[in-house]
Length: 491
Image 1 (spheres, rainbow, N blue to C red):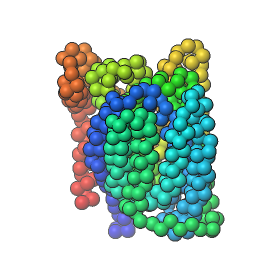
Image 2: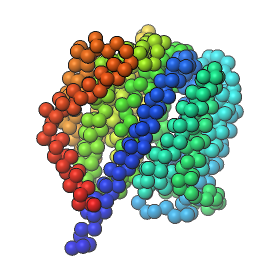
Image 3: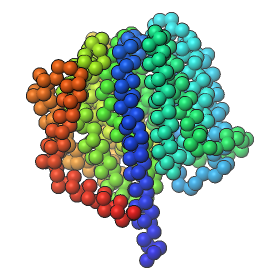
Image 4: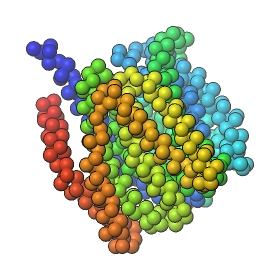
């Protein structure tokens, strides 16, 4: 009997560790998100849309080169079943060292020219070259981060993120006050990247010893290339703001779109945390389709429950958020904010189904969907720009392609592990719409300053909770009760 119960016990322990991982990330990063929000507001008040319009393509190009130099070797260490040995780790490090060195050299030499072409202006070349330092330094993070994530030690990863966040905002705000302009963002980005890498290395000490025995990389590359290909395709889809907008509409419009995208993405904190835990968690239960289905449905439903009220508040108070909190220079971005909120509300569906499909080994499917998704987004944006839609062509293209991808991924989830999600989301969505309408029609006339605006957001959240309790209380009670029982049985 003991032997027959062992798999269940292991799965329960895995579920508990996954939950603890999300909670640990949520507690540690939740507080930092508040700090980050305050820091972001300060930076947007101190700097101009054009300043952000310059840094957006520079940071994106550096991040894109990092992804090209990755080959998915880090997620391969996380996803595969057997524990990687010293040969695997050293081979992955050596492969990454070679690729990252080439990537850093490319950014240093060609990056300034690419940025000038995108912005149609002469930008200080050292703004781009400094980013090559963070690219080169990132190689030391790969193996320690993979080991921490594989063993669901997300508390230590959260601590590294906190270190990077603190460095980013303290340095960025300090230099912005000193009238450093775009350079304040450059120094903040690079400093935060280096600080986070140092924190990960300290949290999981590992000797970075190169090796010439690279044959063990083959299985890692087989999985990693498909995984990274899909991630690169999704990055290219998201590149409409950093690559398409600067060339088509200029730095100021790019800055406005970047602000709208940043604000619309604020409710996705929980989505980012859950997506981070999903790959290693679902990879451990990939041979149990029923557990994958139930876990996916609960994950997506509860992510929607947490994020939808925040979207409701942003949609209800968009212009007031811009003028009272960030500054009136961001008001021209309000139409883009509304469209991008719809886009962001769909992100949890795609952003959580994708890592689940990767975890169960369906990387080819994810790669195909991501490639088509990226092409569709760029085609829609180009057609709308030609038709005279202006910079609104970008948010419309992102939202339309996001909706199409959601329909496709929901169908794939239904086929691969019998995912049935629509009925899980209707009631939270109805509660969010009701709370948002209440906020816009009833509360808005009372919100005359920033403090009252924040209080109005809290009221919208409370109205949402009340509505959700009325229309979905039986399911919510049952799911919370099951979670408590599972934790009690594991304990």
